[in-house]
Length: 156
Image (cartoon, rainbow, N blue to C red; front, side, top):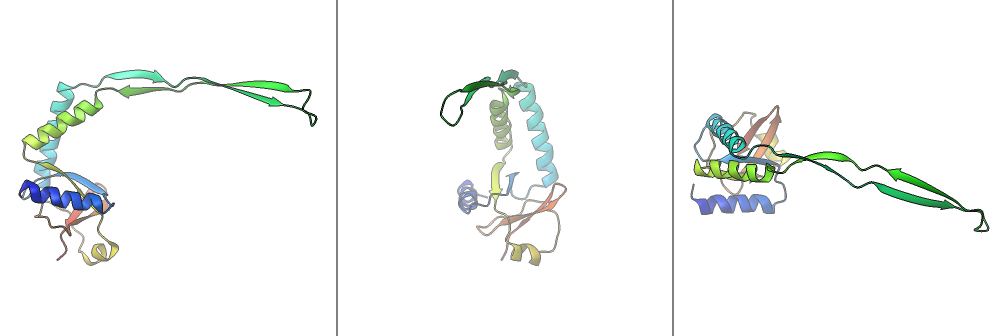
């Protein structure tokens, strides 16, 4: 599929606001092949850009509250300390994701997001699992069947 046409279809899917399904796509390619290529690219990206965990924390916070009698006198102040939260961040994740995407692009794939099919299209479509990436049209949509199974539909 020409890149411009794929871009138009992807742009249309993004403009509809329902981008419920995303995958790497290459027309006519077996989904199993794409999954193998994706695993290869993920392994390459992890090897080239390993996980780099950093420990971070949010700051602690002091909350001072005053409670006074009805005359605004005899006030009692209480101080509460809310401890900061400790968490980890993989500082290489964004770069690793880019390396993965570059690898898939080099293999001839493009990232594709399709809107969810309408309930009328989904109910009228026999349930199956996409095994070969079909040609796409602006009406193409996706049905998620659960368990990681999905189906690309091109109504027409």
